[in-house]
Length: 401
Ligand SMILES: [Zn+2]
Ligand SMILES: [Zn+2]
Image 1 (cartoon, rainbow, N blue to C red):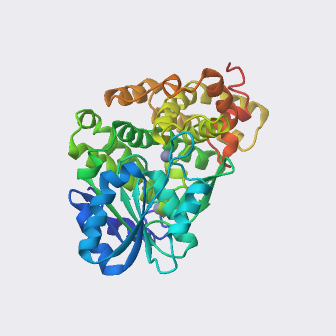
Image 2 (cartoon, rainbow, N blue to C red):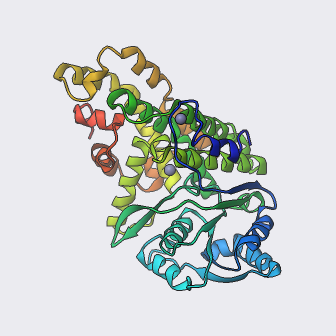
Image 3 (tube, rainbow, N blue to C red):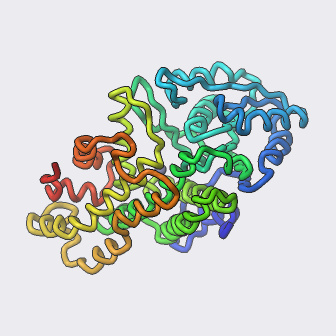
């Protein structure tokens, strides 16, 4: 790792930008082979009774091994195996949350999330409500949200993110991660390469509307992006070192979000588009597509739109005196520099193709009409000054059909 948890924790009070950032509550972070057995020892030193939140697949991938080690260490544990919904997906909805609540008796001291982002969201929410900590044991390098405090839950068919708590420790065993289904590895890679556009949108929001920004943290997220990109060939060959570096990049991106206290560093127009697709799929009862796959596909789409249409949109904004965008008039060189940091969509697709992953909305079952509709409304999902919002507020993509 080119960074350590201690270095990152120090940034909360001592960042080169001079501003205070948020505290990182994660006390221990381990990414590497054998992390699973270390998890058991770490848990034994702190807790006498825990609940493992997992599903059938993650139980097989890591839960059984961890529970055996916990038994050996003298920790009392119970399994809460979250069941899939009618479509066959394990989702973080009110039913799954209730299942985890029912498994969490009054004497339980911690929840252990064993699995994907979804299982983490369930454990994160329930542990926070029960006022006990949770420990993260990821089974795939699938998303950068393992260390986040936000728990996106689907309640009565609507997805809302609740601010809850980050894990107190993370044990990512690369022997387990390496065995993860390739779709989950593609998704983790996709979530990171979406930072090409999220980083540009973050900076743009500062330039246009004075949104909070930290160049140092942006540099760390960029380092996570570059680390992941450098693993493309290794991932395509299934090398454990590449999987490990990808997981470290995901962890770094997630920890930067914790420090910043908001999702700006890791989420821009591409994430808003992905959220809009997710909600459309929920409404029509379709099976969900992995977050990072949508993010990568969306990032390639918005990258092309930004590069092609943002200069014109700024011209329209200046002409009409549109707030806040007209404030960028005369800063053509800055905007040009920013757009130069966004690669063509083709570059992002080529990276996904190199690891064998999907590149087009149609690969994910997202039809053209949904793509166009989402491009025209996704900017309203979050109050952020992204380039996607600029394109919509100036009418610069009104002609998209
Ligand atoms: Zn800073
Ligand atoms: Zn993401």
